[in-house]
Image 1 (tube, helix red, strand yellow):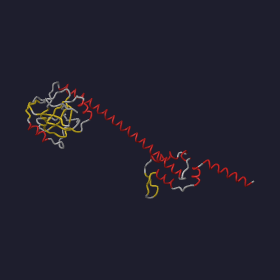
Image 2 (tube, rainbow, N blue to C red):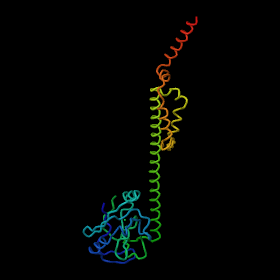
Image 3 (cartoon, rainbow, N blue to C red):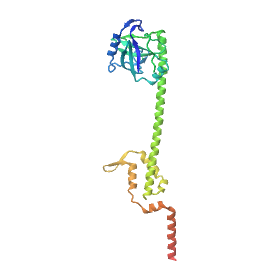
Image 4 (cartoon, rainbow, N blue to C red):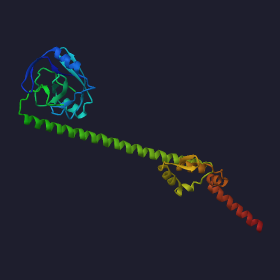
Length: 276
């Protein structure tokens, strides 16, 4: 979005100096602006050291008799202040060589260049030539007001940052919990398969075998169990159980425990009959 920041005409800067600015002057400001060498920040008022920066001037252009600026990386809290109408005016500062130094957002202070459209969504050194800001209140009062507004804006930005960090933390915890449940389910599914294949007994689950495997899962570090072979402790344990030959007794006990007990009782009766 392009914003009007200056225009041709006769203007008086904050130091009381009056000068007539032409289209040629505006074109020079545009042509001399090289953000890769000296990027102009978006600031509040006209700070002496051009900081802190709440955005940057990406490009400049002239539209008729008006100098336009396109901004980037504007702090969200500053966008909100502009949108709410607290900082809809702006003013520019130029170096002695006529290049753009910064664009300053103005609150209660009115700009020295009238007629610029309101913003709808502006590196102060001793050699600054012009700061187009009309000061209608004492310098001390202006500085106090700007500091208060800056403090309010910084607190809002801090609160927004903390809110974002809290939401990210909540998402991290949620996904960690879901991942833990998925790993637990995978272990349970694997154990059920081993039981079906007659390589494990269901009772092992009650003995805490799955809890033991979950602990192995948490220690995801690879270990060298044999020369040249590295794998996690859980994968090694799974391969160890999977390598068991299918045990008929395991499968028989798994298929129908009641039938197993009945058969054993029948065999006992038969033995007793033979002895009689």
